[in-house]
Length: 349
Image (tube, rainbow, N blue to C red):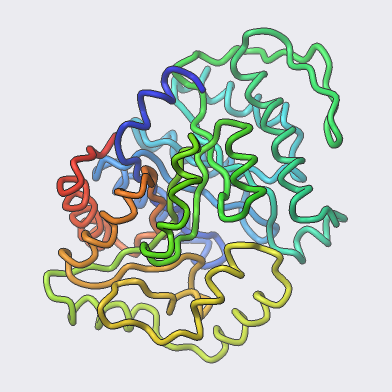
């Protein structure tokens, strides 16, 4: 871990998420990306997650758009190992640092949609994909740390006397994240010095993960938030934004059948349980195949209290879902400020 990493994790780090190109008309997409980038920066978010899969535009081109239209917001670029050699990713990070004096964050993937992987000829088993990503990230770290040539003779990658030019300034060393919902993911996070991101269960269930968090692995959550002064108003907005959709429910069930994702399976065990009216935790958007994370819904006070429970467990990174507009992001940030103040943990920016 670099010294910069150690300092930056004392507070709560907030990332938003970039809209997906498949969901927005091509003529409007670029403007929407720029808008959300600028809203995120205005509300002092650390960065913005940029997805990657076979059906989306290239995340590195979007990262360039983000850098050109903001002053400090970090693109959190999803890195799929089967798309690019680790040297190519390191070169992108170093080049953006060299040209723009800016820092990039990396969301290291170990999986993806199964059909995408199959189409690319990848049949690697779930836990082995984490081994591959671990080797991949070790090479990345060595290249970007610049303290000598990268050397690795692994199962999936072999490099010898490999150096990065231009070198990366130490203050631009990337924040590294990886999925941490499985044992393999948590082990990988520990080995590569990454923040392990979970798709959280209700906070009382996540309390069981305290030992993993206390073991030295930095942890975060991926979650959407809908909050208003009035609890009923928040739920009315939530159901209007994510109405029940029979086609979406069928698509969700089909995706669950073919997925080997641990977090999918963890959350699926909660889907048959009736929603507790006393908790803001909601899986409706996932069940209707509208998004890929749980939501916290309710009054500012109720949602801030639930978010505060995750913070108290040690989760210090929050990746928010795609904000539909600036006003909604403002509501969300109010919740985060309330939770931050109550727990005595500042928001970093």
